[in-house]
Amino acid sequence: MGDSSDAPTTREGDGPRPARDTRLLRVRSDGTPVYGYDQRPGVPSIGVVRMGADGHRSGGRESGAPPDRRHIHDFHVLTYVHRGHDTVRVDGADHALRDGDVLGVAPGQAIEAGDALASEHDLAWSLSFLPDVVPALAAVSPLVWNLHPLLRVFSAVDARYGSGPSGQREQDGTTRARPDDGGSAREIASVPGTERERWRGWFEDLTEEVTHPERTGAPEAMVAGLTRILVAAARLTPGPPSPAPDPLLVRVFDQVEAMFRDQVSAGDVARALGYTPGHLTTVVRERSGRTVGEWLGERRLTEARRLLLETDLPLGAIAARTGLADGAYLGRRFRRRYGTSPDRWRRERRGT
Image (cartoon, rainbow, N blue to C red; front, side, top):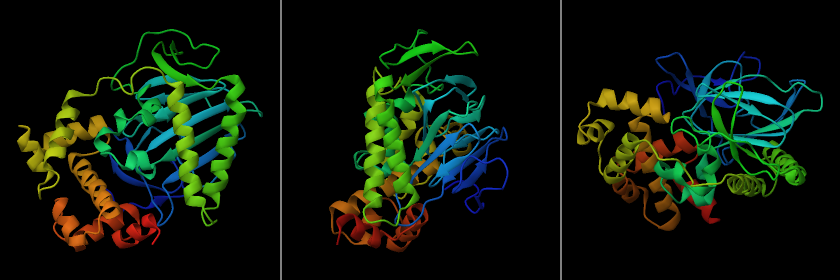
């Protein structure tokens, strides 16, 4: 997926990077690199890293700890500051993070590090993931993930859709929009003081599982740990699950939903909406972090996973129902996206 799918995975020691085990997908016209999650066969796409003031980072797949350089992820990143002060810039808006703060960065948002943790006692975690590892999210179209309650914290600070009136965060840990140093008002969720050690324990447990994915039950424990954190974060974020979505993206997603079962291309989607393919691809990529073709492919593979799990249909029949040429092509796309074959994925999920 992306313009640079063969770009090398970044590793420690390569200089500024958004994460370990990520892959450069493309570079936007403004020079901002876009990174995707480099998945491993049989391991849930979940990464967590523990960060301290000394710059030391530990944990499993390190994802989401912002580098100095501006970049974009095509996966979700959640940061929890257990103790300390930090600043992160998201889509040009500075977010001042304090003790107990939780910040979600959605795919497609430009992220850049500001002031880092300073005290030797400061402690934070960064958690990254692909939503489809969570059963409740895998069961719905990725086109509506931003509306799902479990991902509510990721829309609270989405600068593409605006934010609420300025105010102050209360001591009970509820969310209030507050002006930060840049003068903008952003909503920051915060964990109540009495609950922070519980959160610390959750992140430590998840880090342990991610670091040792070969252990019995580790994949299941990883998904359970991620789900627990997402539920807790969503409960800290008041209001509707998401601000009003971008009208153009709504039209595009509706059209993808209507057409993905047929053998159509991104160009067909664009023409059905009255746009040239090149223009719509550029606009959708700028607004959502993915191209129309990538959203179309994601929707097809989501439906393929559902059919693999819920039916005994052969690959050829599943391909025919998801707009893909044949079973062999489905197999190649599936392996490239998930790191395993459709048949193996089906057996593992069914426990057969």
